[in-house]
Amino acid sequence: MPKKDFYETPAGNVPVLDFIEKECPFEVQAKITSGIDDIEKYGTQLLYIRPGVIKALGNKLFELKVFGEDKCYRVIHAYVSGNIVVFLHGFVKKRQKTDPEDIAESLSRLKKYLKNR
Image (cartoon, rainbow, N blue to C red):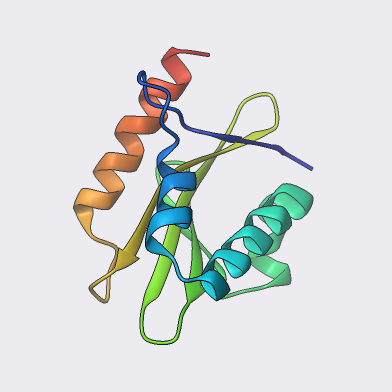
C-alpha cells in the first residue's frame, strides 16, 4: 500500500486539493476522494481491480478518471520511490485524449517534487 502525498507549490498551495474544492461539484468531490483512498489502499493493482477508473499515461504518470453529470474530471498521479503516490494535477477533461499541456504540467510538478524530497 503506497502512502499518499500531494504536490505543494513553493507558496504552499496544493493544486489537486484546490481543484477538488473549487472546481468539482460535491458528488464529484466524494468520488475523487474515494478514488484517492482506493489508490492509497491498492496502488497499481487498482488498474486490474477497477479497470477504466485508472489509466496509465506513461512516464510514471497515471490518471484517475471520475465522471460527473456532464463533465469528466481527472487527477494525475505518480508512484515514486519509497512506496509513495503523489497527486500532481487535477483538471476537467475537454478532449478525447488527455491534453499534452496537462501531461507537461504533471511532469513538471513531478520533477519539482522529486527535487525537493
